[in-house]
Length: 305
Length: 259
Image 1 (spheres, helix red, strand yellow):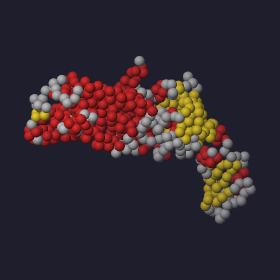
Image 2 (spheres, rainbow over the protein chains, first blue to last red; image 1 turned 30 degrees about the horizontal axis):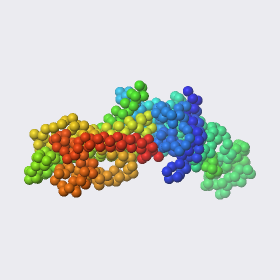
Image 3 (cartoon, chains in turn yellow, blue; image 1 turned 90 degrees about the horizontal axis):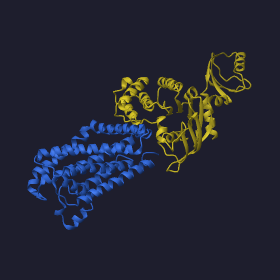
């Protein structure tokens, strides 16, 4: 078996409207990886996923899923693949249980087995109590879980999730993170697209950034974050100030009278900053990152491209 | 062998889904044709029919029965597939099929079987209704009748499928049934024999494909027809082959289904 769950070679897509969505993407995702595919809206992420899942026809290039060329044996490749689309794609008037068993049937799983698998999957995703409800009555979060249940019913080895937590509240989002971590630990390779960069940072080992149909980055999350030159911090202080304190090499601005914003270079020590603030009689009561680290990096890269 | 079993299971799943869909909304799908056809039988058969007299030597209501059954089969087979396939496109649930290992031909057969089953079921319901108004009705050639019933349902299910592939809005799925199918059916010999028409209109009517379907079915049920049966059957089969090829080609190219 291949060490790669997914191999994309020189993938191109031009739509009928002459919009060039992909300009020749090369990408490999190792088996067992938790991989983030990021990019701004219209960058080409959904086109890439669409081609892998056969929802979009490619203009050129090659896609291999666990070494199976999709041009040569797409049915076999599809059996190894589960896809959670960005938009809801089930019949809202059908019952939750029926939606999942039908999806299993489309993968050739006989009704008796599919009922059993559906029960296990719905229980695993906390949907069992909702099994006899029409899908349209579910909340947004439960609909997302139903999408995941459908994608997992045939036990795929590669799971692709296109913005699975869009519009989901924080509690449910974290529950889904735990669930995805669990199935990844059990051996399922996961590719995730998301606009919540904190999500990618928390979950993913490797990352690719795509913009204007081209890959602008493809590396490990650790390597990417280590390249961050400047980090912004927000400091809450005990006393009220009229103007920002002046400390050489540390540009500080006053957000409000008790909150400071400070930019710290990669080679600077945060202890030096605290020492100098203390010497000015300013006590820091708490601190946090100004914004998500990956977000800063992402914006910088997309701007450059 | 394993692959063949998987395809069979997926095909049965799709057919079951399609049949459940129209049975779930039976008040919208099964009852209206029965009610509408009852009204036709009451008004044109029982009230106006005796004043018309005979048509091709048959009681008018008796002459009308095969035409009304065909009309129901054609409209319902077409409507089932066009609305079902367009709905899965509109709701994006077509992705459930496209991401699965189901081959295109199985997807096509699944939807067509849904349309055929509804068309045939409605045909049987209308025939049962007709027996209330004309209990002595006997079928002259059951084999031909059943063959034409199924072939017609297949033919118009395929047409509905192509309509749904090209449809971009709900308007697009009602234009063909309203402005093409219905006029052709009404002018296709459901209510009259083309022998009563002047020569020019009789000749024009011969270009109406519905005429062949309705008359072949009438030949099976009553033993009377305005057209050559071997020619009509050959044309129906020819168009089924052509439309099936067109559907498979469109699915393969992803027209209307893949971006």
